[in-house]
Each structure stands twice: as C-alpha cells, then as structure tokens.
Image (cartoon, rainbow, N blue to C red; front, side, top):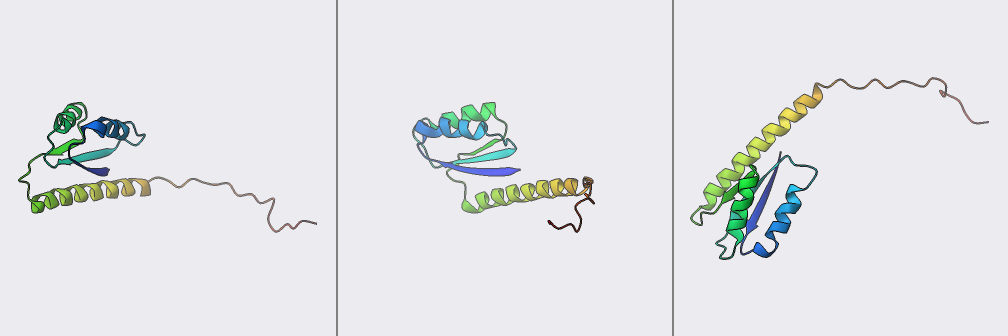
Length: 112
C-alpha cells in the first residue's frame, strides 16, 4: 500500500488534472491523504467530488488540526503500510521457487 500526501491551497485550476493523473495510474493500490490550508476557491468542492467517487481519499479540512494530531494520523498510516508490506513479503516467501533446467552440454567447453 502506498500513501500519497497532498497539500492544497487554492489549487482548483490544476487539481482535477492532478487527481485524474493519480487515479489513472496502473498501480491503484494507494490511499490519498489531502490536507487543505484554507482554500477560498473551488478546491474543497473538487476534493469532495472526487471523494464521492473514490473510497481511498481521506480529506483533512480542519484548520484547527494540531500538528501532533496530524503526526499521529501519519504514524498510523505508516504503521498500516508497514503491516501490509510485511504481509506481502510473507506471502511472497511462501511461493515455491521456480525450477530452472540445467544445461550440461556447455560445461567446461572452450572454443577452438
């Protein structure tokens, strides 16, 4: 799982293009965490619109959100991401290794 952190401020001019680019990538196993810094344009409405379409957008719009609370949220995200990576690594370790055929015809031969 990948965590993408996006900070916004009056970015409605390019925000749709940026979000469309993220959601049209071949790797779609990610969460998007958006923190707005008091936008007065259409930025917040765009984020909410995309949030209704995509379930992996988490929007922080509380200007009173203390840095310690945000840090705690990010630590929780990091912990969940590490757990998912460990599960993936454990799953990959259990896969059988492929058997590669050996070629005995070319052993210890030198060109003449």
